[in-house]
Image 1 (cartoon, helix red, strand yellow):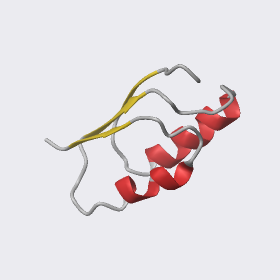
Image 2 (tube, rainbow, N blue to C red):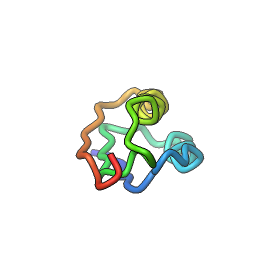
Image 3 (cartoon, rainbow, N blue to C red):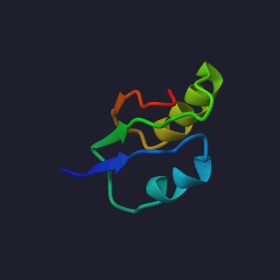
Image 4 (tube, helix red, strand yellow):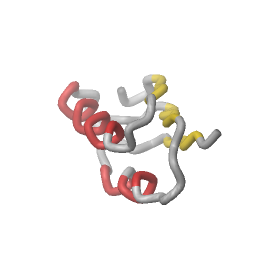
Length: 66
């Protein structure tokens, strides 16, 4: 099983791209908070939109900025 773990994205979406480009198939993505910088739904939606490209289930918890 291959699970990718991210945290502290804080709307810096360039941090997501390298994880999506890994060649090995992914079974799940675990995001340990820190999706946004300002806590807006638009920022969170942008992050999830990119993460969905991996085609794997996303498990997440809100962080202090979310």
